[in-house]
Length: 114
Image (cartoon, rainbow, N blue to C red; front, side, top):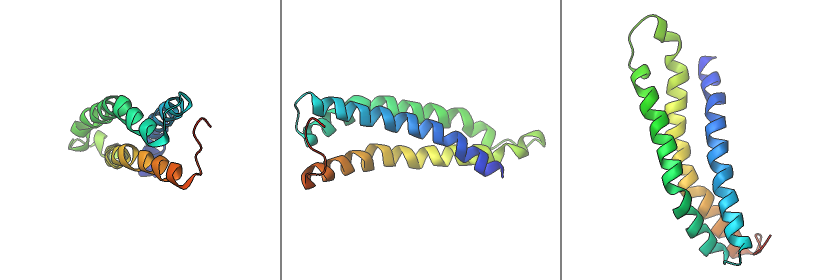
């Protein structure tokens, strides 16, 4: 059950970063850029913010992951879910979301300016 609680906390961070990346991609595309160009610009623009958010979250929680006290034992599953979920979601956010936008643009399912 504590791991599920950690997963719920992780969802907030992941959704926030994903929405910001998608919003920048859409605004670049509406500005007249081709979909692939918009994806490249948005990925470059949001890379640092996404990476720093993830790194600071993990760096702040890793000491708690290795804590041995009795009080921290209940928190370790929550922290483990958040740390490894953040690591996986960062890779997905920086690779999969831009790739999917580029693929959808190539297939014509994402029209320029939509």
